[in-house]
Image (tube, rainbow, N blue to C red; front, side):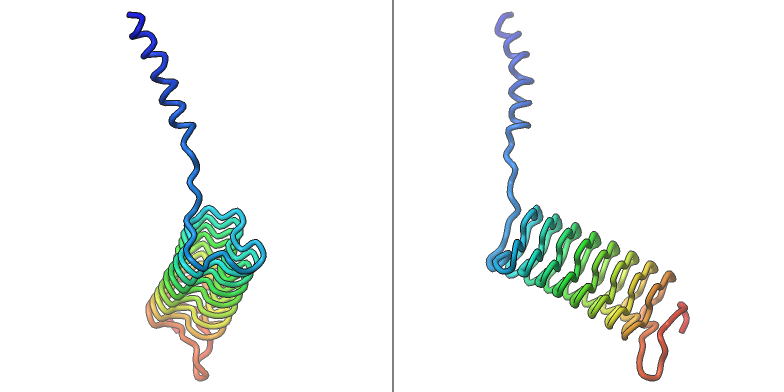
Length: 193
């Protein structure tokens, strides 16, 4: 009886000490990452692939997973919380304060996806402030150009809103292959150009 009481008393203490005693595992950082710039990865808790997060404060306080060749430039992914795929978020402040999912080859350029909270498809949001403060879903190969989808909150299909200032402040759903600016066409301000 005396042994049983000890087991019952010691068992919860053992479980509690195991739970509290678990050590915190630092984030994994790939080769060639976080090696240039001032404090490129201070406060980072997300895993970082190879050749990423280089530049002053490039991934300062980042918590998202960053793949290879991404987040290069001053404050490129500072305060980022979303996943960033390969070859994305390169440029000054490109994905600073991002919380959305960024697919490969996207959000390249100064402030391209700064403060983004939407899902960005592959090859999208290229250029100065292309998807700055975007909150909508952006399809593949869309929003390419200066401020193309600046402050967008609507959903944008594949291959749409390409060209400088193509769909700024958009709130509508735009289908695939729509609202592309050329010298002959003006920017789109409705779902049916």
